[in-house]
Image (cartoon, rainbow, N blue to C red; front, side, top):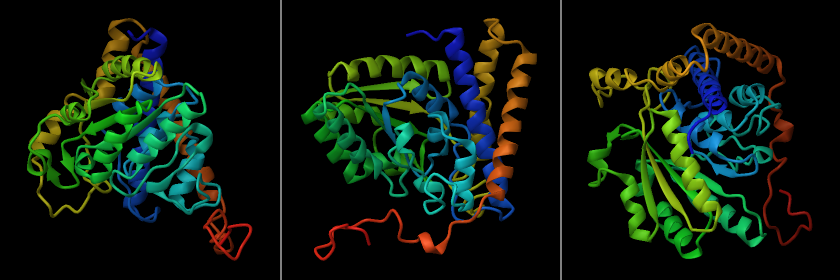
Length: 332
C-alpha cells in the first residue's frame, strides 16, 4: 500500500510530535524536574509513526519501557503524558505509573511495561479475545532485540501461532539490549528469522524510513486481520541517546560516537521531509510551520502539566484490585 500525500503528512506530523516530546522530556529529566527513569525514543520515530498510521483506532497495542513514542503516535494527549511523567493526578495513570507504565485503554494502549518482554503475551491474549468476541481488530506488540531472548517472547509466539491469533509482533531492533550489542547477546542477525521456528512469516523493513514501515505494516495488518495468523515485522532502527536519559551513565563506552553519527546521518525525519519537498507535498515553509505548531503544543502541555495537582497519597490504593476471599468487592 503506497503512501498518499495525506499519509506522508500524517507520518511527518506524528514523528515531529514524538521527537519534540522526547527531547523536552529528556531536558526536564536532566535538570531534575522529572522523577524516575526515562528511556527516550529519539531516532526510532519512523517505527511508531509508520505502524500507527497503518492501524485502525480500535486496534490495540502493548508497549515497552521505551514507549512514549508509541503512545504519542497512537494519539496520546500530550498534557496527560507529561502529567504522568511529572507524577500528577491528571496523568494517564493518575501519576502512579510514571514513564514506563502509561496505559490508555480508550486509545487501545494496553499498557507500557517496565518488564522486558512483558507486553508480548498480553498482546496475544488481547488478540485472542478479539477473535473470540467476533471482532476484526488486531493487537500489536512492540519489543526490542533483547526482549526476543526472553522466555515470554517464545511462549507468546508459539501460542499465537497455534491459535492463529490476529497479532502483529513488531521488533524495534535498535541493535542494543541496554548496553549490550546485539551480536553479543544472540547469534542470529535478523530477529524476524525467529518467526519461522513457530510457523509464521517474518518480515524485515528499514526502520529509518517511515514510508517503508507504513507500507510493510499495511500489508502485514491486512493479512493478520483476514485471519491468516500472526506476522513478525522487524524494523532496523537506532536510538540516538543512551539506554536511560540523555546523558545515560556516561562511564560505559559501549558504542562508538562514529556509529551514532552514521545513524543520525540517516535520520528518519530528515528523510521524510526530503520526500515531502521532492514530491511537492509540503514546502520547506510549511514544514517549518508544522515544527512551530508542535513546539507550541509541547510548551502548552508542559505548562499545564506543571500546574496540575500532584498525585495524592490518599489515592494510593484506588484502582488497585486483588482477589479476596473475605471481600465481595475485591478492592484492596
